[in-house]
Amino acid sequence: MKRSTLFLVFNVLLLVSFLATYTSQARILSPEEGRLFLKRIIQNSTAHSYWGIWKLSDYTDENESIFYEVAYIPRFGFGWINLDNPHHYIIGDGTYRFIYDEEKQIITAVYPGFDLPFLPLGEDNIDILVSNYLINVDENVVMIISRENKQVVKSFLLDERQALISQTYYSKDGQVIKRGEFVYRIDHPNDDRIWKIFQIMDQVVQKKNNFPEVLFNRERMLIPRLLPPGYSLRRSYLVEGDQGKMYQMVYSDGINFFSLFQTLLSPHSKFSSRIRKFTIKKDGELTTLIGEIMGRQVFLVGNLSHEILSEIFDSIADEGR
Image (cartoon, rainbow, N blue to C red; front, side, top):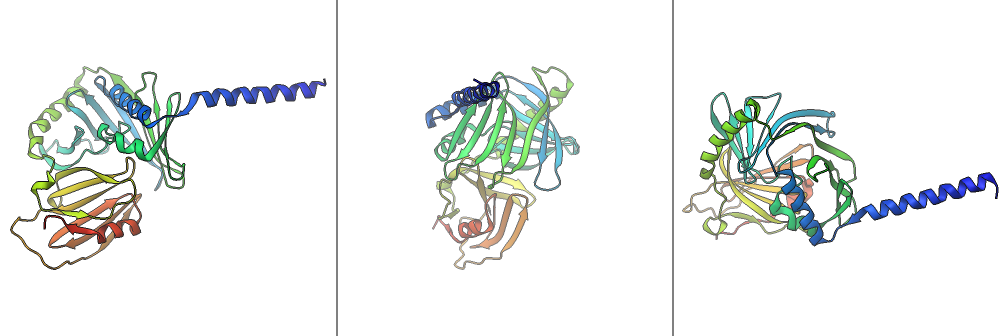
C-alpha cells in the first residue's frame, strides 16, 4: 500500500474516532434528566458566598461592554452594581429586584426578580423550559435548543464544579446578541467589599415584605386571553417605579418572555368603554406597547415581535367582571 493511501486511511480513522468521541460526549437530555441537571447547576452556583466582576457584552448595538461588581450571600441573595454607576445597588432575592440609592439611603424602585444574570434560570422556571426546549450537554458546555426550529437560543459554560461561569444569548436567526461572564471571582470572601453589600442587603430584606406577590383571585385584573404557544403565567407582582405602583404579570416559555404592566384601579371603579392609545417603542430585542384599556394605563413589554404583542394586546380583557 502506498504511503499516501496509508496517510488517507489514517486520517479517516482519526476523523471517525473524533466523531465517535464527540457523539458519546454530547447528549440531548430527557425532560426529567434536564430538570435534575438544571436544578443541580443552580444549587452548585449558589452553594456558598462569592464576590466577583461580571462582564456583560451587548452585540446588538455597538458591541458595548458593561462591568458589574456582584456578590452572592446564601439566604440573602444577589447584590450587584454597575461600576459606571456605583451608588445604585440592585438586590435580587429570586422574587424581586430592589434598586437601592446609597446616597439617599432609600429604595427607589422595585421590579421582578424573574431571572438573574448569574444563574441559568430561576428554579421555578425549569419545568416550562424542559417542556419547550431541548438541553444538549457536551462536557462543560450546555446548549438550550428550540424544539420547533432546532436553533440554539441560549448556552452556558460551567466550571469543574458544574457552576455557571458564563451565559450566551442568541437571536432567532442564531446570531450571538449578548454574553455575560465572570472575569474574576473570589469564593468565601471576608473583606470590606462583601460586607458593604451585605449591609445594604439587610436593609432591603427588612422592607421587601411590603411588596408581596399578587393573588389574582383577590383583585380585578386585566388578563390576555391569547398567549403564544408554550407560554404561561409564571409570576405576578406589585412593582414600583417612575409610574408609581403597578401590577406586573410575567409570561414565559422558559426562555422568551413578555410582561403586562397595569396601573392599580379601585375596586369600585367602573369603565364601560374600551379606550386604546398606542405608542410603540423598540429597544434592542425588546418591544413595548403602551395604551389605555378600561381606565387603566397598560404597558406590554417583551422580546417578541410587534405583530405578536399587538395580538396579545387586542386580547386583553377584564377578568374581574
